[in-house]
Length: 230
Ligand SMILES: *Cc1c(COP(=O)(O)O)cnc(C)c1O
Image (cartoon, rainbow, N blue to C red; front, side, top):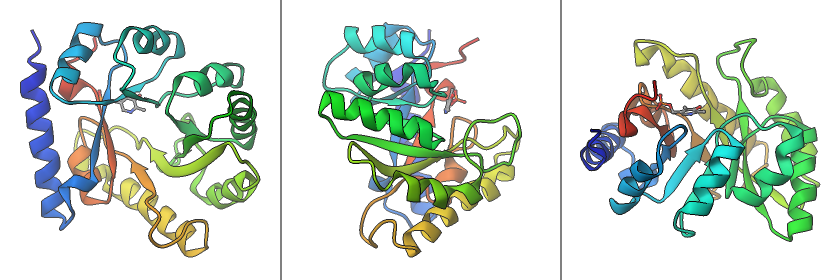
């Protein structure tokens, strides 16, 4: 049996230690508990320990869970979103972390208008330059942000990345750094003011400490919390 309370406590401690090591405020880093393929009672156990933000990859699965659980929880879509499911995603999620095209952004904006609700989105960046991965190339970020300026029902509140998996988490460090520098570059170009908080969603079970050292404000942790999904 997975001891979720214990795992959560360990992860929170490791997050705080990594933040402190990097001279950052531990309170500036949030945990997104990745609950894909995790049974409801595990999620409830995490909620009982104060966890309120969850990440899901699949719409159908998320819809059932969101309906069954406390309405006060926040849900992030962290899996790839197909255009034909944008309406459902706009209805279900508090944040869509995986916007990677102007087409998808426009659909979410339209659905936001229908629902009369402004939605926070992150831009997914393929920081590892992997051909098979979702996300825009880093050099496309500025163009996408320019294109999204006209949308009134979605706000870009962050960037998200999923570097290649390495056994040694140090290997992912340059990817995390690249995402942070990209956000800083866009800020310098005037997309956000100096004091506006822009989220950096990066780091998973294997590498979240390195991601925090490189500036992550959200880490998405699944298996270290809920146990192996396989
Ligand atoms: C599954 C998943 C995670 C969590 O991965 P773990 O290695 O289990 O922590 C994080 N981000 C995304 C996009 C995922 O699909």
